[in-house]
Amino acid sequence: MNDTASIGIIGGSGLYQMEGLTVLDERKLETPFGDPSDAYVIGEIDGVRVAFLSRHGRGHRLSPTELNYRANVFGFKLLGVHTILSASAVGSMKEEYAPTNIVFPDQFIDRTRHRADTFFGDGIVAHVGFADPICTATSSTMSKVAREVGARVHEGGVYLCMEGPQFSTRAESHLYRSWNVDVIGMTNLQEAKLAREAEICYATMALVTDYDCWHESHDDVTVETVLAYLAKNAETAQKILRNSIVPAATRNRDCACGSALQYAIITQRSAITADAKRRLAPIIRKYVETVD
Image (cartoon, rainbow, N blue to C red):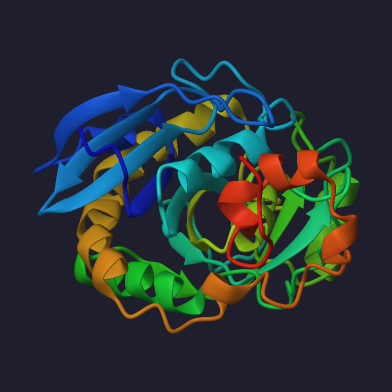
């Protein structure tokens, strides 16, 4: 069968239980960077082929630090995905972003410490531009759909990506607020970096579940509160993703995401190792003559 897909969706395992989806197959992929979080569920909606991946594995087996971000994004590239739509839970760092609100951030601050977040090295060096880490056109598509389904939407903002798996201390939470951060989460930054290196458009839908631990009149964040608000938002999140698939798949990709590597690879072509060429062939073959 044709198992390629144009749209990738990454989030909770329940996201592919959406109206109008025909599940066609499950693909367990091997990548040069190890195993992705789970098998990719390949489906079709309104004639568009979609690949779903459970970020933490079905049953939520993997912590944010344990996620193999490189394998997850590389697997989408192997499947032919050109756009990734992401959904994840976040804490709010501002009064106006209340639980069940949805934020479409356009910037990141990195507070992670233990994660591989590039495909490059080991024989080939590249430096992609990351000043604007989110695909604006894809994010605009999702936020427009979110408004149409009645969600309380905030466009733009800074997502602080922390290491976890523990939540913030109160001192950290107040520090991040002094930086004018909008939301805090544990997963999206590495996905955005690797999608850019893979020349895949990436946008994220941040589902607000709590006020972290800075808000004096609200309880501190707990897993219980996160899951409760995620459950409230599940149907809305599914509608947004479902209704974003066709416009994301059919839009004119006139953004810079699809050519992010054009001038980024600085290693002399004669110095790139054969192993690096083989390992990264799906990503670099537009710019580097690869080997089988």
